[in-house]
Length: 269
Picture (cartoon, rainbow, N blue to C red):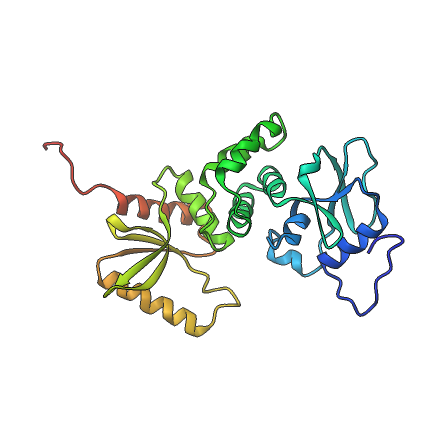
């Protein structure tokens, strides 16, 4: 896992195990960063395929020190203040705030936004706190992307693909929807919608039906819920895994724009 670190053979080879092993053999100016730091903060920003084999530990040396060098380490150097660093079970790691900001710069746009929403959800990092830190990142690679994402970060988003859906909506210039909206039936909150425009009875839902962790019972509940909504005047736009690029992205965004188009105009024809 890391030169000079010995781990019992029965211990699983995981990101947490590798980070802990590395922390035993590197100097204190080495800090776990980026997606590895996010994982240690319970924010998983790895692609599905990356979990097949444990990814390299992303670690940095404070500026002026030698980068970490090991087969299982993706090393670099970075300017970090003492306030940017904390310890988790003895492992020096960037704080949730700093990690969120770093990923907002370094990851591809959708993945960056999804990670930032998860940090907002699990660690209470608000858009105002993120914006307050922006001056520190002036002229840094990726800061333009970070600045553009911060206003839309939403803690109510529950999954990465929901975050992608929200980002597609706002980047298309459409109004921001209300996330996790409850439809009340006879005074009882009954159906929760991923994103809704209640005044227009329009909702957008990310359908993870192709995910391995969704049961037939869950899929049937989704079908019944959407049928009820449509019968009661809702326009339900369903987004699936392949709907985030090309013609398929354009198609559901056009459908949403049409559904939100005002039905009343003061113009005389």
